[in-house]
Length: 153
Image (cartoon, rainbow, N blue to C red; front, side, top):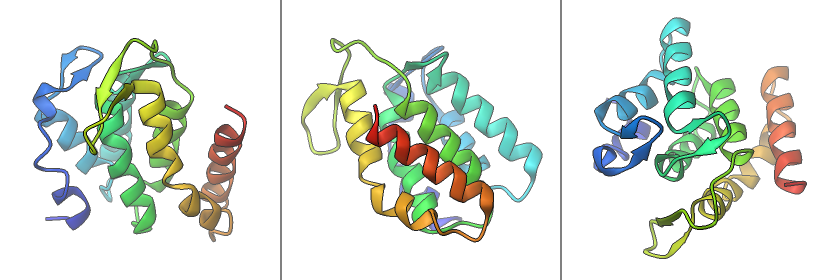
């Protein structure tokens, strides 16, 4: 098993809202798929998450719980999938949820989903700055794009 994904196994994915209703094991599997050495699996996983966690610029509750996983992937500089992780973070950071949609954070606070996602993404600021010097041009560009989004919401 992968230690990055293992730490998210205990989240009750089936109780969290996604675009098509409630989440489930398929969300957890899609997160696993983002780390696959198989590019087809990574793409399929990305699009599954992009269509359930955030869909057509709408945020869903699960997005908040996905962000810490995405940041862990970037922090650990996994071999595969970092570009798609950046894409998901950008989509989540650039999406909308009405202020009346609340989420209970990992610390027990109840705040707007949009604000909660923004706060979680902000916890990766040091990673994004670090990745501005990544050997891969694609990662450098995506880190820059996300930093610009954070600085100019």
